Amino acid sequence: MSPASTGASTIVGAAASAPVVDSRVAPGGPGYRRMSFALFLAGVATFALLYSTQALLPLISSDFGVAASEASWTVAAATGGLAVFVLPMSALSERFGRRTVMTASLAVAVTVGLLVPFAPSLTALVVLRAVQGAALAGLPASATAYLAEEVTPKALITAIGLFVAGNSVGGMSGRVITGWVAQEWGWRVAVGVIGALAVACAVAFRLLLPAPKNFVPGSLRPRVLARTVRDHLSNPLLCRLYAIGALFMTVFGGVYTVIGYRLTEAPFGLPQGIIGSIFLVYLVGTVSASTAGRLVGRLGRRGALYAGGGTTAAGLVLSLADSLPLVLLGLVLITAGFFAGHAVASSAVSKTATKGRAQASALYQSAYYVGSSAGSTVGAVAFHAGGWAGTVSVGLLAVLGVVTITVFGSRAARVAARRVTVPAH
Image (cartoon, rainbow, N blue to C red; front, side):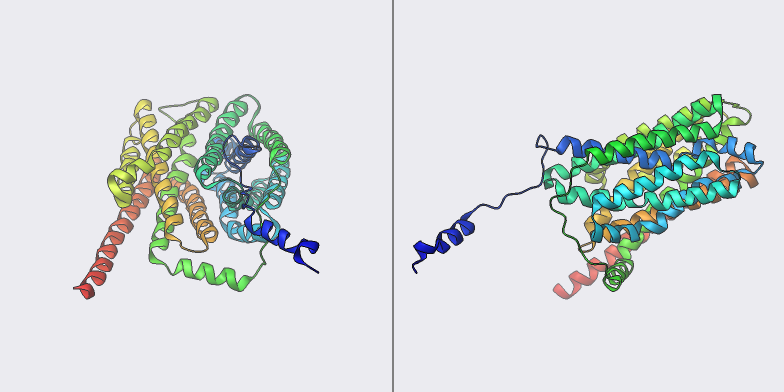
């Protein structure tokens, strides 16, 4: 039978010549706005829940009759749970899908969020917060991977930027809302309001997020994952970046965990609503993070890290003053320096890792949240022992660590360059 009669040649030729259709969406394309808004809402819910107790620590201390160092565990447990589970969640998303893992994570987190207001003791509250943090680990582990698969490369930075904006808005609004609600009705009602807000965001997220079109399931192979993680941890540059992210977050976590206690005491004596509004300073961080690319262009990566560390240190020193305007200016500088340093370090991780980028980013996030937990706990212990000056001392030591690691990295880079150029001569 001739090829013409079977149609085989015609079909093969048509298939061979048919253009490959890119199913990824672009700005203005169908589903792009829905996708971006859905992940924005996921970011809002994640960070509103994660830091929902941070602005309320003085009230929690009073309710349970505990010191700041004990109440701070309600923050440290949540960020610690996220730090421990972010890598396993990234592996689960490779097997079961990004949208599935994100949906399940939010469902568990908001359910726990509705139970938090009824915690009968500090221990129960800390346990619930740890479970909530572990559940939330599925969001940062999956959201960027989902976007990388479903949007065009040119739109990726903008789409991820919207997700990060949701993180910032969630972290800020969660603290501001809880501050004002708690002033009138107590901390339990305040965290309940955040739980209800997160439920609304989670439902809208699931209804709006388009089904993935480009996800290809992988297998859960512990040996491959372990090998990838081992390779990343044996890379000196990646390890330095992980340490820098953790140290920057140690400063930030410590300052914002303890600042509420300082501002309720003399000479300030501010009410809870005003203290919650202090977190509007986060908007400065959104701006500084978005301009970090230009800072790197002018100063280089190490120069940008020095600038971020120096700005953070200047803010810490200013915050020692007993003048509210100077304290607020100090918080502005701390926030700007932290977000700039974090943006530089996290972006450098993606550029440095040549394979297993999802795991490289997950390791950075894990180190980042370990720093948050450490900062919350150690900063509160230092405040209990030496007042605000103790917390500032912890922050300055962390900044010194950032500078030391960056100097060491500069020297290591020069030595490596010499090793390359000497054989060439």
